[in-house]
Length: 136
Image (cartoon, rainbow, N blue to C red; front, side):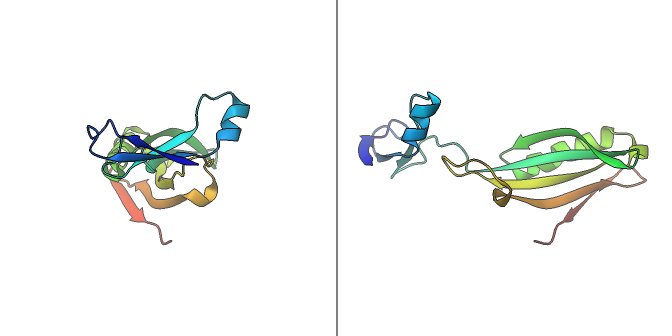
């Protein structure tokens, strides 16, 4: 069900279409509302629909161990954080990392179909981080 609402983010120039999705699930979980508001004029302060995640792994006793990780809305920011983290690690543990692009849909739980590894990063002998785009 939808209803029209004046948008406050663009000073009332646009109308929001408020879509009630997952209302039954929200009531069962005890959440107050589960609504998505799409303004026809502006973005209306929506949460980002896509995020970039970075993960660092180190080989300890031959097995990869998850280390530091983080999330960002920008791919460049994510790559910088991964680069800084890999440079701080001990090269003897053969650290490597990856950047994952994840798409979020309102009301749906994240799954493996919504995430895709787009870069792999390795630390070379000179202490430089090398990024390699994955073929997908």
